Image (cartoon, rainbow, N blue to C red):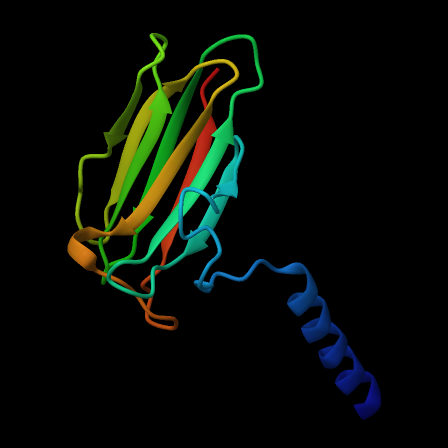
Length: 149
């Protein structure tokens, strides 16, 4: 009986380690526009920045024949305030950006923008005024990306 319990615990831990996505900041992964992580509608991601100059980048590609309205939602934890911005191409071909209005610590920031057909938009999350978090103290952000059409 004791062996069964121990085996079950070891198996459960092994499965959790192999199938769960880490929420820890990894240096070099999605830290720049060039290394941005691919995202899609329904995308949900949780992480934190671990230095005052750390940024997390994501990218989405519109493979449809029409413009897509993208809604970004960034949930901030109570100790750290994060900011979100999007960089995209307008219908006239000009690259522009939008930044969500900062709601502060523990609040949710939101913004929306149109992604033109055949273009890639980039999304940046960074600490407000250089704020950064650390594991174990509720300093993570939660990013949600959704298409409205």
